[in-house]
Amino acid sequence: GWKAQVRLCQRYRRLAATGKPQPKVTTAIARELFGYAWDIARRVSPAIAG
Image 1 (cartoon, rainbow, N blue to C red):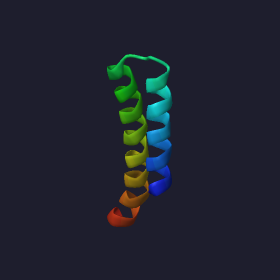
Image 2: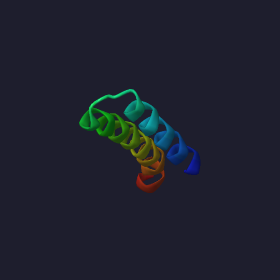
Image 3: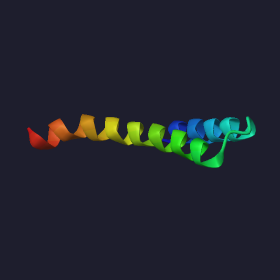
Image 4: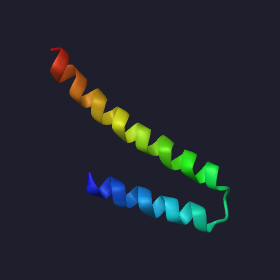
């Protein structure tokens, strides 16, 4: 949702502002985004399977 997008953008900017290496910042955001997508899939899958 929109809240997740705003949160990820803020997190990205905050991590980038600390001077962390770009690949590390991108990986951190990607992991969080993957977790968000995984949670959605986990909630939807039982409804489809059952």
